[in-house]
Length: 170
Image 1 (cartoon, rainbow, N blue to C red):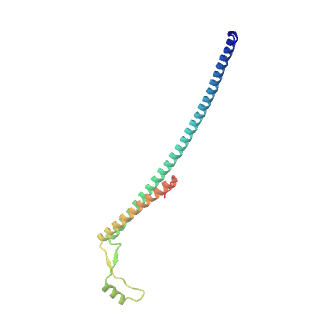
Image 2 (image 1 turned 120 degrees about the horizontal axis):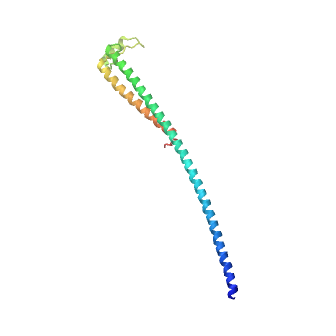
Image 3 (image 1 turned 135 degrees about the vertical axis):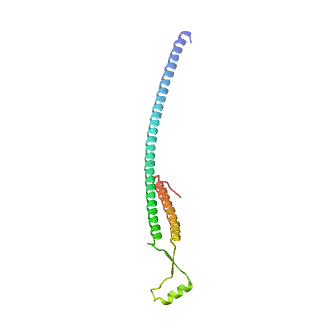
């Protein structure tokens, strides 16, 4: 091969290589651009889904907070009503309008009452409580009732939150 035939062939090969390189670059640029568009779409979709999920959770949290506040208000009303009733009862006990008594389980009292009473109309021996003692017993019972109301409110709140968030317990 002579130099005159070699140069045009080298020039053609060089031009072909440059054209191939350029075409390959364009193709890679197009693939990269497509990947960037897909990534941008996925990012946008993920951001939208995240915003929607966040809005749903915030709505659930607000509703749960409102329900818990309502339950707390209801508990406060129940406790206030119970305290009013207890105070009224204590006033009635102290004034003598209400008298409290307990059965007396004495063998002598029970035998005497049973022997004189007609069948079916037994008279039970009872001992009347002093107002101070009645008030003390009522305070103990009232504390127990308050604790029961508070525990029931806790259980109601727990069940509401569990149901609101669809939490599965064992």
